[in-house]
Length: 182
Image 1 (cartoon, rainbow, N blue to C red):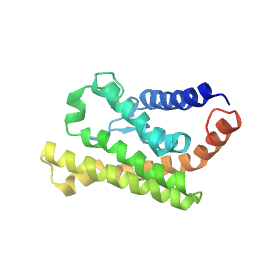
Image 2: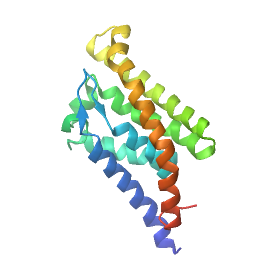
Image 3: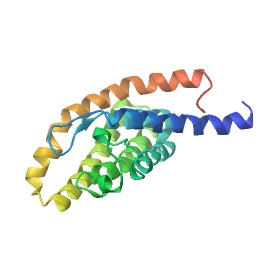
């Protein structure tokens, strides 16, 4: 592959994953102060397609687009107030989620280890988001866990399994098509 393609394809797939995250994240279901969205599914898939470094860049692009007011967050919201508000810790927590899950997905072919990476990354996301929510809203930790963590565990586990199944398949097909590096 010529040098220009080697540099353009990684940037393009990173931009595509940022766009996918921007497209799926606004569609959400309100079940309380934290809505259910497909954002984490897009992030779990991004670590298979981009690795942890470009996955983090893709996630950061998504967050920055939301920060400047693009309606890419849940319920088609955006802006600094959304990130600085009670649910902003979950948005910021997407970055360590991608880094932690991505490192384990990149380094280990074992699906159990990859799943554990996604679980660990999601636990950090929950911890950051819930702490931020408690501080911003004045909600006690136990109550916040019941509203902001427990209802999301089954859905996030399903999203992780979907990513475990689809991520490697999509990655392998993109590699065969010459659209991903090694």
